[in-house]
Amino acid sequence: MIKVSAILVYILSVCTLFGQSTSFYNPGGDRISLGIEKALSSSISGGDVNGDGFADVVVANGRHWTGQNKIFLNNGAGEFNSSYDLGNYQSTSYAAELGDLDGDGDLDIAEGNDEAINRLYFNDGHGNFREGGTFGGDITRTRNVTLADIDKDGDLDILVTNRGQKNEICLNNGKGLFDQTIFFGESDDSTIDVVVADMDDDGDLDLILANRDGMRNFVYLNNNMDFSSKISFGSGHDETRSLAIADFNKDGYLDIATANIGQTNVLYFGAATKPFSRYMIISNAKNNSFAIDAADCNKDGWIDLVVGNSGQPNFVYLNNGGKSFTKLVLSKKKFDTYDIKFLDLNNDGYPEVVEANSEDINPYYINRSGRK
Image 1 (cartoon, rainbow, N blue to C red):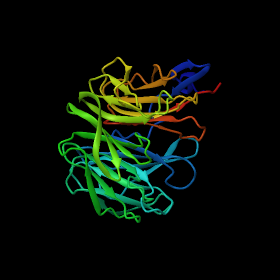
Image 2: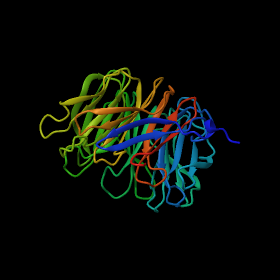
Image 3: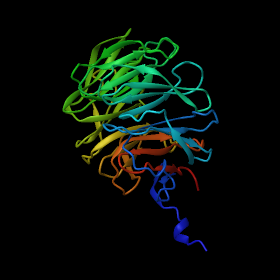
């Protein structure tokens, strides 16, 4: 007879907001996780790689030490019972991002590596990936990769953040060849993340940089691919590792949520004049926050946040009408979380939370919002 304790589902976070219950759960152990391997996981990217209509997950492993990047296939119920290696190389990977790089309708992968070649992997439409060249500088301290059509020519370009070196925009020729590179930011920026969004509402994509090592954060405004105009945000001596962009107070202007190391996490509000000068503390705790993501996780019309911390619990922050946040604990475990994402794994419209943890398993948490 199965013991009751073996089938209990432990509710990790429960909150009632505007009449709706919001909860995330994981039954504990290794079952609801991306494998049982305790790798040096640094990032996760979600998307349907095999064309079955469900979000699969790519995990980048390694960081400073070579590791094997993995692809986990969703069985349609938000579970991952199959996985396979990405490519033949083990690399010092910080990122493996999904996007249609060659315009054939399926998701390819751009792999960003620390002081090693950044590689491209092209999908045959069924989740089989072949190595297809490189992008960016040969020896760079790549910390993140962002995919966006930055030059508005109809294909995805690759933005590469290189800590302590020039950041790169690798322009796509439309066929997945990235042989033209331009630079952005300062040559000594300690850039860990870049997010692209139209921050000044002029129809093109601007660059929002997360810098650490006490360096100032900037929004670089896009003027026909000229990024010389910039707006600062933050304290001026920040330790920012990750950003999330959304209109959190629904005033029509995009805001910037920051995940900071050893500092409070802060939300900077966009505005018509003096943008990002007004701010709100997300949480008074000075956590070692390495990752942040945004989505309306309970479908109440307000954009929420999830924050991944190093050596501390991870949290979901529910948006209280753009005026404050209610904090939910995902787990009491103190992972070394390098990336955290909202991803709808079971196609119910409520995004789950997926973690990339260094030297531990990568669990995910099922979103039970709105369920009885």
